[in-house]
Length: 394
Image 1 (cartoon, rainbow, N blue to C red):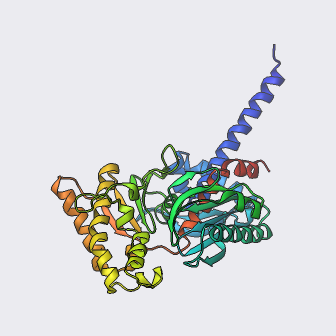
Image 2 (image 1 turned 45 degrees about the vertical axis):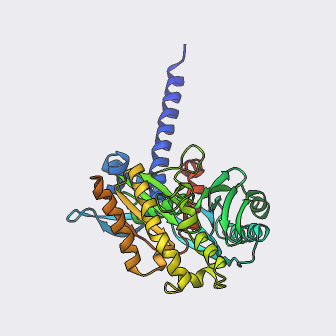
Image 3 (image 1 turned 30 degrees about the vertical axis):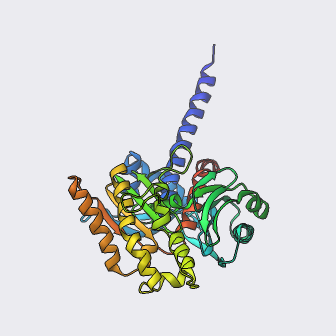
């Protein structure tokens, strides 16, 4: 029969574990919501306000949390001081591959980008050169991160889809050289000496956008990314949905409707389709030059099909997911505003015809580091809880 002393020790251990879980949950919330207030923490975690204030005070006293500027809660509510994790407690690295550039960042635990590397991709670069560029950027940033922080907790890659094998970082993608299967993880792991998390760049952009601009917003947000591919990501009450194979929402693989026989949206309204048409018409301008020349005959020819096809794709995604908000990022942000208005008008007209309420639709042009930032966030998510639990214990 256990003694009273044994029961007391077990009870103490249970209380310590419960306190550790509570502290870890609070720090995880602040990690995901930099500059959070005590009132926001209490409301979103379902904790009492006095208990949150006590824990925040203890973490600030031990140097885990640092205070920032005070923020007002609501339109007329009291002001409350915002807190973040101490920046040098840890960091993660994110690398984003796009058609014309590899971009990488170091993201600290306060949510700030502390280092950036950009490496252009030449139109003549093939798969081997591109893998080498991604590995080089990842290696440079990992070395820099280790010099800045004792805890480089994660490395994430944002890759254009479809994602064929997440473990090996194998994608089937169409960049400037054409369609190919490319594998990234072995080269990146060799350059960095770290395990690598691989994510479709649509999810990286969606995670980065949500946490930067609407971290506490409820409902369903759909992010549409239109670059060399076309895909949709869904964020539901802050959670990202990626499907059974970690690559749901590839609109580019759907067949276009009437007027586009045998073609997919990827064939009609993506950056790859624009570059392909330019090559067919013997136009030797680079992809960036084409985006900056909306009156170029080949670009006008492409827009005639691309605008209605893109509106069709958005309509299909809205019907499938029924989101509260739609955020669109990609090549159409480079064209005049009237083209974006045409797309939104076409989507709303189709929705009105079937009696469906249109969601809020807006085009968004973030900084060019959004994908890399999202890759660092998603890679960090996989290891954040044990890392923070160790910080609480220490």
